[in-house]
Image 1 (cartoon, helix red, strand yellow):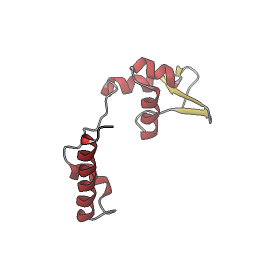
Image 2 (tube, helix red, strand yellow):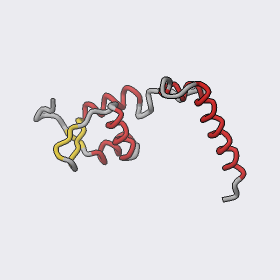
Image 3 (cartoon, one colour):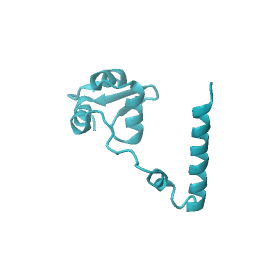
Length: 105
């Protein structure tokens, strides 16, 4: 709960302090990594102590490490698609990636 003595920052102020973009701040709020207080549909504030906790915990970096292989990247979708479907999707992605490398535009 927000107290009267809490210092509240705008998204722009928080982004400037952490040296990230406003979009990153919005993404962290959406992911639940950064608590925020919404006063109206257009007014969003961040407690400075929540921001300080975020910067000391991970210095603005993401907590989760990037997946090392395609199977780890598709783990959230297990149960939604079979392994064969996942292999097919991965193959299509890799094929499109290779084609885009040779595309002159």
